[in-house]
View 1 (tube, each protein chain N blue to C red):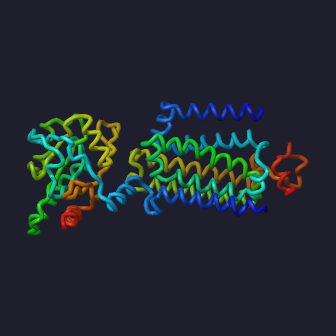
View 2 (spheres, each protein chain N blue to C red; view 1 turned 90 degrees about the vertical axis):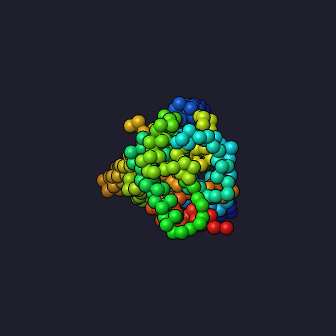
View 3 (cartoon, one colour; view 1 turned 120 degrees about the vertical axis):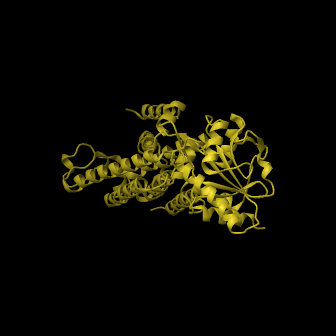
Length: 212
Length: 204
């Protein structure tokens, strides 16, 4: 699929997600809002970054050393949108929701897509090892909180959201356990190991990094 | 590494931290209710003083009827099986505490129903349940739908259907000062705390 098709697909998906009925359906439940709508918005940004990869300005690629600034943007951006207050504001004020719809793909998704390739394997492992327990901890917070944290969600929705985040954390943790110890590596994290001859295709980003 | 790296990293860090600080009011709150409590405490907020309500005796009144004395306000619906009942008991105790304490501060209580289904009879029954007597403790409903929206918005009340015929709603207690401004939003913790808060606001 060429870059233009990816770009068009991402834009159309974005518009569909922004449609009022789709938006309110996905935001009416806390678990869906946090564990589905937001990750999709980030994924759209990652798609865009794939489409724009060849057009990335040289200075940006150079300044994003080892993908550090990019991944910091991802961590801070996702932290902000995980706050209960941010969820409330996104529901009650469509201008704030528009900010969410713009920042999650552009300031989280695109940096993730661009910077991930530049990160060394240990850096990626560090991010995963931070992200998975953080997700579980936030899930535990929502699951165990005796009061409602969001004005727009019921307590049972909050408990469900907490349980969902914990389930996602466990699933990711198990995947990474398997990847780290059983030897299977997800395609997005393929490294050029010594047995690279048997691995299909190499990633352009990796070549760029080793040349840098 | 290029010279662009520290610049980009500093840019990302400062923008991200600023965003996080903005969203948490300087790392003090994480919920929208908490943010509102903080902003009201810093600067009391004006309320729609001409908002028209009708109490349990069918008497119409506006919020500026309370000018000159602080009021404890809570939001209820009369069919509420849980929180509202506890709050009603607390309110009755607040009146008793303040009278028994020999304080000459004159305060009023106001329970506002956000349920369009609450008619005068429902308000009256609810009032009788807790010994509420107008005008010192009014059980009131907004005069019309527009006033209800305005009132809920200015106090910051979100009432959602709970899927079982009732509502899920903020259970805070609101202190309106003698100038008719929203001065405190309290997480209710018994009648003593409510009485202390309203007396604090009443003190010149």
